[in-house]
Image 1 (cartoon, rainbow, N blue to C red):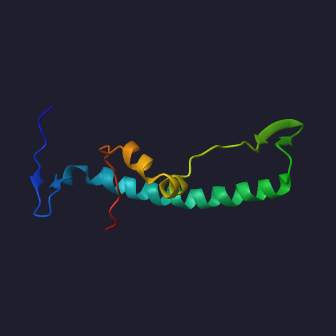
Image 2 (image 1 turned 90 degrees about the vertical axis):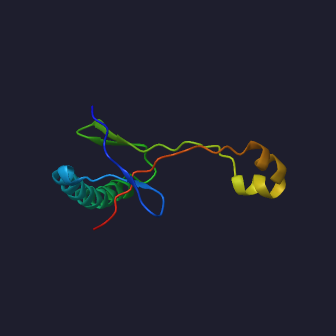
Image 3 (image 1 turned 180 degrees about the vertical axis):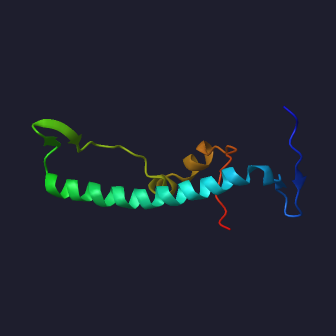
Length: 107
């Protein structure tokens, strides 16, 4: 596969021309917009079902389970509290990792 030509911008990051992917980029925009609309609809529908379920953990249709809404316990570490009580421990345990984030830039 040939190497994709890139260029470094004055601000630092590299750029690559995506003109040949125009249809893909446009489709991504459409799918993202649709996903946002559908997520809002899904939240509304799930909220309605949860309201009907109240404290019940299983919802049924025709006597068969179709949804489960169970409670679980989660144990987490409060980074804020550790920083306040043991700041030296936080400093000793910090890790830095390189992460690439794909972000949609609105046009």
